[in-house]
Length: 297
Length: 302
Image (cartoon, each protein chain N blue to C red):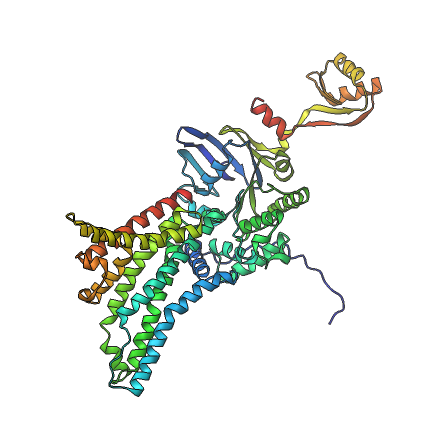
């Protein structure tokens, strides 16, 4: 080995490799959205809440399957007291509501407040691409929240089936489109509205509060108006109970409207009206978010 | 110029309601380093936003690197970088992560983005700080990070909006040095600034805007006026001024500076003879160098 050193001035190396243009920009925006929602590459305190909610959403499914295993082992003739796929949406519905209330502001507000949006504006990215990529990040997370525990339950219960695993899978095939449809309904009910609220304020705490307030206050107001008045058409006040629409449509999908104790159900509203309300709010929210970002990007 | 220019405007205008920000401007900017100067409200930011495809012009058109800035803005943005004047840094991630993201947004694959981020942070002198969160950066470090994100994808052209804003003298020197080096990397530069001295130091072309109109678009070398001699005198200049006037020269005096021009002969020869005749001591003598400030004040009628 030579004992003489050498100094290299590396200077500036031009880049002549692959450039993925708009597709690459969209992919980066989407991936950054996922990292941000889960607090990945952020401080530890930004990871606590999302991962706690993930555990809350998934743990019951593991517990359900575990208890079902114990029951099938020690008391095979007993009827399972554990919930169905439809019931599990009640658990994840609340968890996902909280998660979306925290995630949507995290996706949109810091970019505007810190000025990073001007960097996005100088890259090969349309405003619609930015909004679409951020929405896709949120929808991916919601889909994960909704479908991973359901998949665990589906596979777990099939594994415990007395007729064997594959027969167990086949017996419940009809549940799969219902699970997917219900997950889409919850996603449409939560995500666009949460993104809209996050577009209209620059404070994350305010966005979270306003979003949760719309669901909680709207539902309480709708219930009181339905019960306290008797003017013709008062039952339509139940449309204000926005927190109940996804659950009502879920019950419709799983054919359990008759057993529903929701305000919207007791008011006598048809479930398709709840679906229309969800779609209308989602459509208006999407239009306003896109319009707003076309103005500022 | 049209064929070799990297940025062109033809009848380019923009109005915010009844307020006209740009009045049908026309210019061609060559490759290299161009300074965009003008007071607040001159139309600099509006022009940059049009060139980036963020704003649609209400009149005319602009081309950047041969692409229509409005209709082909995605192609333009794939080839340019932009350092905004205001904040553009998230405070909760590290410089390295932000640069990787900025490179990814320009379309670079993940591996290349990481490599470029590391290289460019070294180039701007932030290699030691690359794993620190941006929220803890000083103003100078933030400005260098902003420059780094603008060039991390090796653009053909970079727009720098007030790159020395908020910097202390040392930081300003470093930033101007970096900007001067960009040309050597094959990156064309459009620097927007209201600090005329910065433009004089870093650029070889200037586009001057005033009230939404082009005051001047030309090379900075033309600012040196070879037809006028500037003499800085030691002590009294009265005898020298009388001698110059007697020789038929036109003389202007400003403090210790005497400016000499003549239609009858070379002003250098006339000045030399007058200095010899009067024995006047001088600090310096040479062609009058017009500063950007002179041109700007003259053009804007102030």
